[in-house]
Every structure is written in structure tokens, then in C-alpha cells.
Image (tube, rainbow, N blue to C red; front, side, top):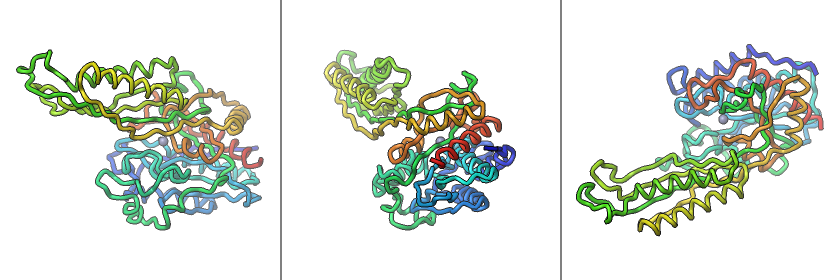
Length: 410
Ligand SMILES: [Zn+2]
């Protein structure tokens, strides 16, 4: 197949999309259902229509742009990502998979290919948790693993209020896709880590996607005057929290796998005064792995450490599980199609796991799924200086196009 990626056009479209932010350049902030989000959607939908794709939106604003195949009744091959961005982010996270996916389809069109199955570009609503506090909300709803009535922002404004104000109507129950809607799904994304760049590989083929479990841990001790309260009389909530924090690190390391990570990202101390013994502490803990059972084993160790601390220090510890998504194994057939496509274009690749999670984590629940990573400079992401070179993006789009074509003809 004679595939050529129009890298200049793709770069220019990424630049244009980065011009619809809520933040001063070069930072990009694009929160779902904001005015900037609306303008970015209009822009991308316009490009899809220009490419002759059939464009539709669902009740929460997930966008579907379909290049109808020779046998339209067959399940389609999906690709895509997101265009929302966390506050003060860069211009490549998500957008490379959307505009790169579109350019992959256009390259196939230019080559004269006529795929058997339809190829559909998906733009997921709100991959980032900025508005609703939950990541991948659009793809979770598509996969039927989120109850839309539970979704609201931090001020209590519901998803229903937000999406109707943004012009999206129709039953929220209609968003979940029927089983078999896609024969396969592939997401192109920047790596958001340094491994490909360090190893000098232009491509990474993702074989598993790690998933987080998060806990809120409330520790209650006894407060008092930092001068008057004797050490032997103390039940210092912060000291107990510090023990638990170290236990999180130890538990994550105990698996012996690089794929297990544990983090205490929040530590709120009350009352938070230099001359006051901490009375209460709230920790937020994130544990991730590509192996769900191993991750649950780490959580069990942390729970045991909480019990030990309670017994030793006389504090009270309450654990609240906030979230626990299942990790995903990528589909071997889609992985093989990606590997064959990379080889066909002489592009070396590394097989790797995705330590961050993506919409693909949820698509994997309803369709055979894999991801294609391209390197980004210094592994930097979620920052204004996030950067992927036009060559890296073009390589990704090229291999994506080849992969989509091969999957669509099966
Ligand atoms: Zn992303």
C-alpha cells in the first residue's frame, strides 16, 4: 500500500487545535463543556466532514466520525483519543491520537484503499478528570461501566446539567455501546514517559494498561499544645500517617515488579499549625499495576499496615476506597497487526506497558484493543513544554493507517 502522511498538514492542524485553550500560550487548558472545548469540537468535526466522514455525537458529546467501508454492516475498526486537556497542559496529549487518526484515514483514502470494514474515528468526552473528578468519563460510559447519574462536579452540578447546557441531549442510558460495536480499537498516543526516547525507538506497542486503585485514609489522633503535651502522652496523627506513607512505598516495592507503583499524593494535616500536635490527617493513596490481583495484594498489605499503626499508636484509621479500575491486557491480534505494520514500514518498536491509563483501558472491555505510543521529549507530559516531533507523529500516523487497513480487511 502506498501510504503517505501529510506531516505539514497534521502539524498545522495540531497547532490550530492548540489555539483553542483557556490558558496563555503555549499552555493548553481545555475542560470539557467549556467554550474552548466547544470550539475545538467544531474544528475537529469540520475536518472530519471535509474528509467525507459521517459524523455523529452521542448524548454526552463523544464524537464518532465514520469512513464507511465496502461492507458497512460489519463491525467497524475504531481509533481515536481525546481533545480535552488538564489545566496548564501541552498540545499533544490526546490530540495526536485524534488528528493523527484522522490523517491516517485520509492517507488511506489518498492511497485508493477501499477497506472492507468501516473505520471510525472516536473523540472521547473528558478523558481528563478536571470537571467531574473521574478520568475517562466518556469512554467509561461507552463501555457501560459508569452510572451517569452519579457524575457531578465538585460543586454538585450534575453531568446532566453540564451536558444539556453544552447542547448535548438524548437519554444518558443510550450512550453505552452495544456488544460487538467494534471489531477492534487502536489508540495512538504520546508515551508520556521517557522510555522510548531513552531506548531510541520510534514506536512502542502497548501490551497491557495499568489501572489505578485509590484510597482516602483518615487518621484521627489526639491534638494538643506542641510545648505542653509530653511525648509519652501523644497520639500524633501525622506520625501515624508517616508510618502508613512508608508502608505504601514498602508494599509497592514488595512485589519486585517495576509495574507496581504506589503513591501518597495528598497529605492534609489538621489543624496544620507549627505549635499544635496534629489531630487529624487525610491521606490519598494511589496504587497501580497491570496485574489486578497483585495490585490487590499491595492494597491488602497497606490495610495491614494501617491496622498495625492503629494498634501501636492508639489512633483511629478509616479507609475509604474511592476507585478501583481493572487493568487491561491488550489484544494479541491487534498487537500483532501493529507489529506487522511497523515492520512493513521498517520502523523498530518496543513492546511496553502503559503506566498511565487511557480511554483504551475502557474500550478494552468491549473490543479487542491495543495502543501505539510515540516518544515525547524527555518524557514530559501534562506541561506546556510537552513536545512530540513532526517525524515521530508522522511515524505513528503511518503505522496506525497500515494497522487500521489490515484490521479492516479481516
Ligand atoms: Zn491522553
